[in-house]
Image (tube, rainbow, N blue to C red; front, side, top):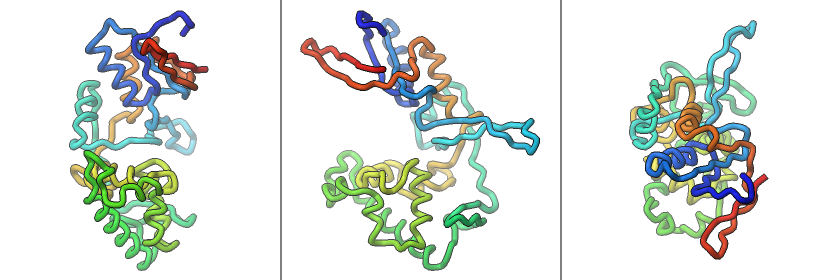
Length: 261
């Protein structure tokens, strides 16, 4: 974008949210000039679908989601968008046993959580109940009305759980947090985590594959298709990759100046 070029709408980030915003604006006001700026060399944000080898000789590949990948019918906005983009879903396979890797040890399990030891199993269940109890007291319309909101907002999820668990249960809960939030417990604000769980119906509903739970369904062909198809609807020329925004300044006229590489 040159110094003289004027754009009506600039959206920072080419994940699903940013591209969906551009898509809706284009539908409502097609006369507006829209530009989406993305720092990475691809669209999709936290969704990433890759072709991985599935045979010893490397001649066969299949598509795997390496980032955000699950949807459920209770998520009305994304479900409606999938129908609009003509993307199909299928039920997450969960029959039989699952596999986990904890303490560098791979094991199979048939319970809702891996069974490392009786102590770690009990501690995990106890911690989940403690979290669910805290979640139930969070008003999603105003999380700052939560009891001890200031304390929760100043601490991480790891800080919150530390008094409840010993080392034996830590890997189990860490794995659950990684699955739900895509990061470590030390990187998640405690109040945000509780509010997020409240909006999703609780921590267990965020990690189970039962009907209505967050991991109920997957998207045929991979979740990154959502962003890729939105780009086609918006126009590839409206999306600029490898363009990290460094600064946004509002001038005296109410207009915004964007500084990017």
